Length: 455
Image 1: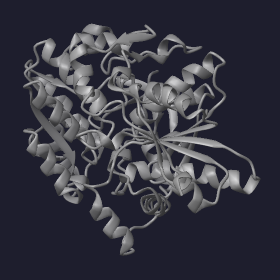
Image 2: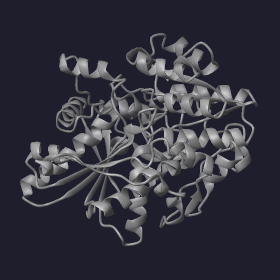
Image 3: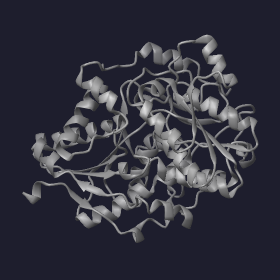
Image 4: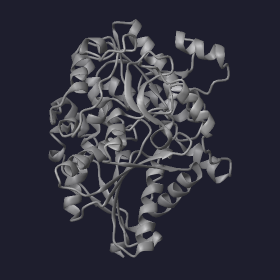
């Protein structure tokens, strides 16, 4: 009977990584530089200084392979890291598959997701550089609650603009953010020029991450005591998440196994990159042959239907232009329950490795994602976040393919957070209230038509 139970591979606290891994040191081609939104010239560090502390700006542009994790950050990491790696034997049995399925479980963090890995680091560097308060956006609320908690640890004020549809759908996530001491405003709001402009044109707007980013950036740009913190997309954010993959490689060695396929859900790209980038680095050195699969919702298909080009990261065009897979900054996705995946663009680093052929992208429909989440919960006892359900669904696909082929296959995926604050979405799924949504090609084309001209 023991062989059918979940097996957990744990590392001692002494094995928390000493340094983050920066894949920019190993890329065969460098990233395209970010551009100033006014001059369209490559950005210098001083151009980002109104928004970020210099220590994070230097990480953003660094090509050093390893960046040391400060002792104060590692001490806080020790509250939940190293995060466990699980062998999902009960799920394997339910699927009757020869595949080995492993998942790195980031829901053990106090905030309930992987977001705390970068929130602690960003709050630390802001505190050291003298920042008094942070402004940010959040989709489903995982990032907002993580930054609120980290801000409390370092004595910083925190202002969160939460996408309106998630603000309404997830009151308990909002309550968690407030419990950590941050203030939360539904976005778009009347508090900012960008928010008021959106509401003037679309009074019933359900919001988007792009709109919420505009509001948070505007607040930071107007106040020298406030800096902006982003939960995904940027290089330094993805850098901080590599503790996931670094730990996973050591834990897979403990298991005596090596992944054939690595899976992560993608919205802005941080949890996917956290697991995948250390393995892609190994692929570039000829030390891994694993396929790397990014999974996105069919309702917001930036990697599979977007264009790889320069675009703004926000709706009001206050941010620098970065080269990424994008659906256009005016794209407002439908109100699917995976609020953390409702972003028009993708991390430049994730877009770059996809363009280089080092990763591939697939989509999952909302109903398939929830069906996979329910199946996983009944087998493994963990209710995943709606975002994580996309990775679960893709991992199950891989396991069933192995079954159809009659071949062994080792699948590793990132279970980026639990769904304890997302139970209304499960109630809606069980009641048959959720629908699949395939974004119309003509609407994508309209959003892409508004891409900035660099000529």
